[in-house]
Amino acid sequence: GRVLEDAYSLTAQQMEELGIAVRWQVEPGIKILGDHRQLMRAFLNILVNARTAMRETGGLLKITVSHSEESAVVEFADSGKGIDPEQVDRIFEPFFTTKDVWTNTGLGLSVTYRVITDHGGQIEVDSQPGKGTRFTVKLPVLQKEQA
Image 1 (cartoon, helix red, strand yellow):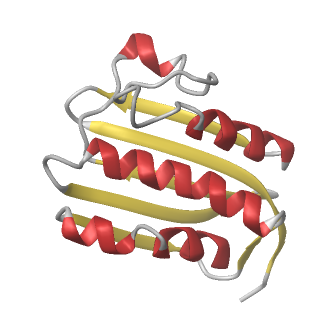
Image 2: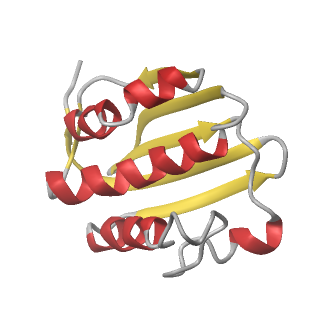
């Protein structure tokens, strides 16, 4: 929905400049329930993470919005450098960062995790070093409009 587009608009120019292609696949009629500003921040943190992972190489970011039962499912799959298996389990911890400590507080994904869970949602990460990372966010939906 709108919140995702608003978050993306803040990174679109940098994505383009870094040679990152973005492919959207959005199921129509899904309305995510929640605080626009907080959810935008949560999505922005995931987008920035994907951008950082592909900063040196460019690549492809696939953003998919679909629907399952009472949830909106938003997937962000990047073709970036991936995350080491021992770090994946810690990625949502406050102050944990795989980036340069001086340029990043490591709060981004812990904030994202808190916002998503505060909204009654779930977030999962699946990553393969050298192949990319996929974040899957499930959030309650207002309704699924009938076609």
